[in-house]
Length: 227
Ligand code: 6GU
Image (cartoon, rainbow, N blue to C red):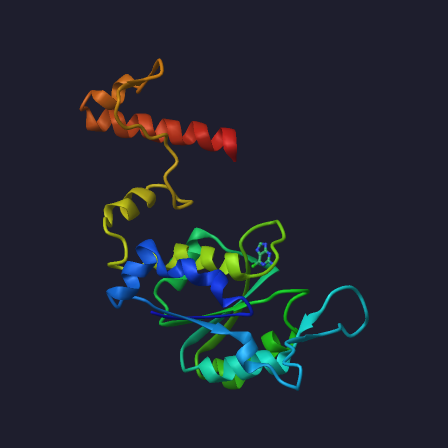
């Protein structure tokens, strides 16, 4: 999978080279390229934004600058993901869907966001015919300073589902026991007693069926309490 990320703060995305994703890149499973939007700036001052039509606070990112960057990266079969708090909610099923795509572009907006004509332009039939799909995603109901952290959240959730990226693929089948897509039962490791608190007896029993049943019940209790 090829991933391009476009941002005015490319250094913000340097954690993408660490840990699991660093290894996945070295192994050739994922190729992540971060691009500086300022490299595509126009005009003598090299600005990437301007005041909003209709008035109001803040600045809007220029469609001309964004299109210069996007035109250079767009190929047949690309998913363009625009990060915005006004986007659709990113969830585990969405991560699953994107994990089998060949090319993702993450457009990280700052300020009041990217001129909406970028979404409109790349959604036109000529782009659909080239299998270019445009999406707007949010990672949750709160406002971040920009799309950079949101893009990293999405990239981590998506790439760990690519076959070969996780060291232990059993972690994935454990997760799939739950429709929401993640582990919900409480976990314990040694020591069996710590600061006066015991690990639940059943987990020491070696009775795998009973342990599975207990974990399912605990997951249910937790979901009722926290969701
Ligand atoms: Cl994608 N962007 C921003 N700026 N804030 C967010 C978000 C995205 N998702 C949740 N909050």
